Length: 509
Image (cartoon, rainbow, N blue to C red):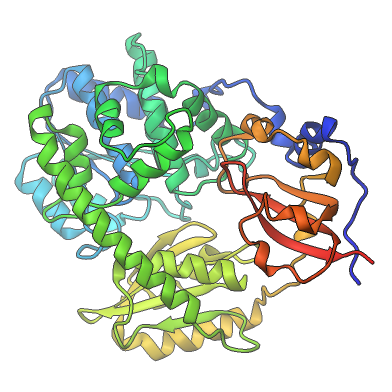
């Protein structure tokens, strides 16, 4: 019978030190922004934005249609207004219609609109052709992005991307919204302005939604946003919160979760996006937009339920090193492809590729767990794609549908030659060991110190020694998975609201 490791102390008194020892970044609790001088082109970009506003130039902000892109676009749009601009606009591409990055549809709109400056947020690092087209039309482009940097860069006026820096940089893994925030900070520094505190709340939304690692600087800045949420809540944030179902306002994570679910809806046509329109519209126009978003949220949640059923019933091929699912029968909706890929990757610990065919194109959402690098794979197979992009564990591509068989063959060959299946022992993830006696007296409020939880900083996992089976049901949500017995060692994952989920267990004789 397997025995769990028990090298850690079993005293509730030092559970805090056990968790800190398990997640060493949690010791860095004092928030401060490192020197902005380390970011290439940041000052150059800031000066160009200041000149554009001073000269009343026509500015277009190009965002991305996810929460990171929406929050990035909003805070920059709002800040340009504070700077005094009355000639700035925004464009959010609809990924279901337009390709990722600056599309010909967008460049045509910008050229015909006689814009002077384009600022991209949360994207643009691979938009070579579009930037060249705009440059030839005497429209300068500032790129702010956080995705993996290619070997060759677009011919933009300036490019701010933390992945141009050394991987040891505090900024290396920040979200797109944080890159935008740092540009705002540099502009404010040059103009001797105070950065609005409310932007911290939007950093939290974008960072958590984009699943950047909540470690190091990311953890510090999101933690600061949570801590100061009440003080930073402006009229807009208050309006959105007042439209929520009744929740505990002290639990900021509940507010963040709801805002993300609401504002992730709203894709529209011609560069419009209802969620962004809600944020930038005057008060009198908000109610009707909010009602449209609430309806879309309800419909999307119905789609999520169907997607969950798909994942539950999905039969994983035996001995597979990856999952290549081509939705020929149109079983799933395009809006849920990423979620389905994420759930299957978490379930199988394998790289997952969910693909749909639309208008002679293949559209893919890919996800994986630790031990596999999607962007490394896509870089090696880039000859198959029209375009691709993303992160190590979450990426996507578009390709011509006539390459379907070729893509499937090369993908399967790649994952077979880069196997990722490995035995996973949840005991390796235990943050602290505690006796049953101490556990029943333990106050979960101590976990508040380690919030916010998220990517790479999950809710704590505890190993409870000699737990009493007849009493455990009071604390866990999935008690029914346990066999008969009277005493066991059990690994529990904290689920918020003082409940736990059983991760693993071993019966004691």
